[in-house]
Image 1: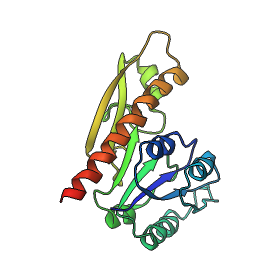
Image 2: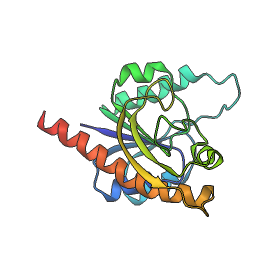
Image 3: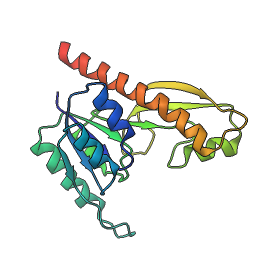
Length: 187
């Protein structure tokens, strides 16, 4: 099973995956970011499918087609989004049914969306966590594969809470991907 990691940010999830020995066949970024350096440090092939348009007129379908073309060229079977910043269209989920994974910094279905940690603190929740789920066309609504709780401490701010969640996320995501890959090997 060939694995691609789609990422847009700091690369901490990619680094955790590579350090754990996940067989990453391709790293894809949608903008120049730290992920490119992390990929290079681990000798992973990295391609840029650059998103240059952030306007309301952004052609999301055309962009998704470019991503899918590259995944097809690379014969990718499983996609792990790791801080990927561009929402893909339904054609991605039709091309990879139940084969696109994502993480989220809350115990879904609580606090979906981009500002989950901020929303958790604003609500006054005492417990949050991390969710690994199948990505679907509806953001943060796919079937849950794994979750782990993280306590919200009295002195937490967005940074401290998010860092504790990310520590869990790096481990839980790797374990979930390993389980999927192992299951596929014995099938």
